[in-house]
Length: 323
Image (cartoon, rainbow, N blue to C red):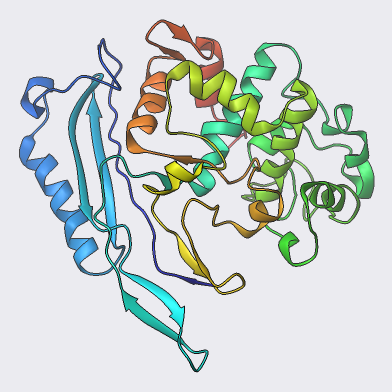
């Protein structure tokens, strides 16, 4: 596939602090001990990269001590649409939608942290999942092909031994097929806990664990337990039609002859109906600032406790010796 848009958002977070407003109050850089020239230089570098073609546009947000110091939209949502002409060839067509501060982006693998890891740690707090539980305790069918020693902690730390990636979208038609393939067809590439190997498959499995332990699909669990309580109103899977209007496109998909705008870019997530533990989440810089500040506040946001302080500390603690 030919990708013609990639996004960049910048969040600089330093320490937690008091605030009021939505999502955070504003402050001048010098009021929170920042060099305004450094802030301007950072945005100048982003603008330079956009001008050089690294991406059609970007939205950047800087926060410090619980305050927004800067937020800027640069460039456009996309530079070209691609269509087929009368001879059935691809051609570039100039197109421009100005980038907005409230533009919604496909978060891709940031889904792993914001949605899946947070949901798993909530279920750990509730006693429904243990970090050192073998995955087969919750998903007995996963034990095939000597995968019975893989634990939840292994999945979270990318040390399960599962392969990084597999083209499920080329072979299967829905999420149940993907789950069955991971259970029955995928073997470990290395012993559990031996080495770190970034794995989409591990987080697909974690998303499934959320569903098994909570009895709810991942997108609905995350919406009710993470996004709504935090006021992250522009964050979620499967954007509605009105939300797609301000969503940045990701690429032209030749298989469907359309530009993906508000439709998840990741092909394996597409075949899973747009909801997966490894990709599929959409959001804005404002909502990501809320999430980042919640983490800096050790799990709390505006009086709403999302995760315990001890849980945040666990998430910040290296889990693999020597890694």
